[in-house]
Amino acid sequence: MNTLFTALVIPARTAEPVRVEPIEATLKNLRELVEGDIESITRGDWHVYLNAEGMIRNLPLNLRAAQLTYDRGLDLAGAARGCAVFLGNDEYRGETDVPEHLVRRAEELFGMPLAA
Image (cartoon, rainbow, N blue to C red; front, side, top):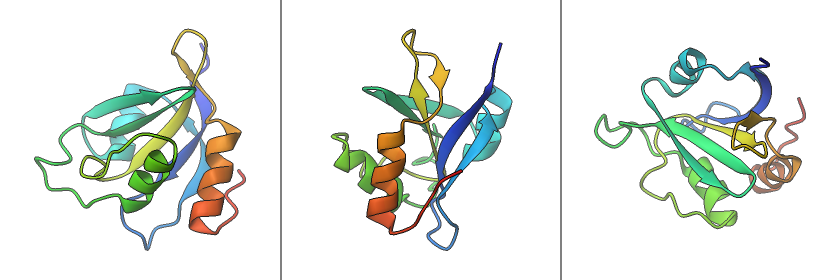
């Protein structure tokens, strides 16, 4: 089973770059990326993984992830904390590469080319 997918990774700290990179979408790796237990929020053809205890652990707000999700019709204003990992959904709600439209919109919002 393929677990290597292209992801959009948005760190909470604005000093760290937003990036598009291949990741192994395993539970262990996703937990490492978000620094703890994960929660997934699905919207259309994509979903985002966040730290499930981001608010409890007082992780930094992820303003860029909140801005991107809000732009795509999902308000995560206070809930987007810590690193956010965006992937796509296949027809069975499994993992797939992050949709191109999400990467393009992130490039527009954050003023940077993100091509992998």
